[in-house]
Image (cartoon, rainbow, N blue to C red; front, side):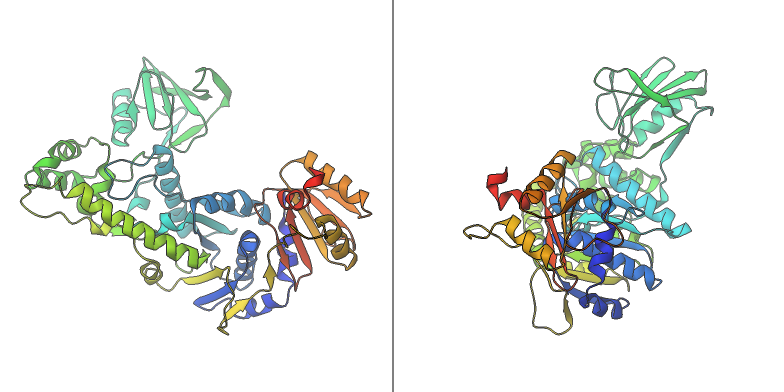
Length: 477
């Protein structure tokens, strides 16, 4: 559901006037609790848009869970925006295991989309959501120069060459496709489960002509839905085996005999498990993910203190793993191997890679520094151990002309909360979208994905989740 009305309500608070006045500053530090971060991110984007600044924003959360919540929530606060996900690997950079094809596909799709935006511009807000782990890990340079392989209905493809192309893109040939990154060939039928697709697709050929493209379910292998005109295939590995990469692998064969099995396959153009761990020495260059952002884009760092602690832990863990995993692997080598370029960088190093792009931090902790803007947004009160219940508090705040909005996961829950509030004399309405001019002394309940609520004092706005409503007044469960 749409929560765009909350963005306008938050932006009305007088502390946001300070933000608006400094919106073009290269560095901007704000203070707001975790629950307000999605709404505040949308507010920042709207203020940057009003100031005619670039509409691309890299939003960095301290954990993968918080990043997933942002992906699910930002679209509600800014319905016209495009939300891109840049997930972190499930593996460490130097671990001789490859990240899942699904993760790689999402990352490559986001990089490709950023390249398109840099070329054509953006006519809507763009949010690239990532965890601090994802942005602190360097990525291979030039990935935006490798567009997805597009298969179009009605075009001609030579099946042996198509199979070879899929193998080069690190897709595994199997008898029966069951997961992303796999393909199967049976006569004139090719099944492919693309890394970014929700369902696998079945390609039916008549000779070399691609006659039909149809989705199918991997559980029962039955076709489903309407025919497709085309399908995009993103690689299942982030190290693209270019002639340079293959040549470098051949050179290293004699230098590192203990890695000969892996290097020999790469030199022959065959993707191998764990090849990403050698990216710093196989590829020409490793860069920060911020290098793929268009000039003028903003980086919004949420919970910087928590992110800094997370970054320090990641760097320490990765260094320990690097020495433990690779000291034995390069024993007897003619030369040392330097994989440090692929390790996690610090937050300070990340800020140095921004190349003039704006950095906005949103801390959960207040500061005495006058340059830090405290937005006077608070967490929802905790009523445990108090005589005052959440419904009494809501009734009191609503009577004071405070705008109270409750976000629920399900429509049934919304109806139940409305009944509970009506039982204590509070006017409550279940709506799909917050009206432009909310009625006074009315609580609005809407169905939306929101992890935590907040209280914007200056905006006279209170936002709660259904979990907060019930946890603080458990007798209504």
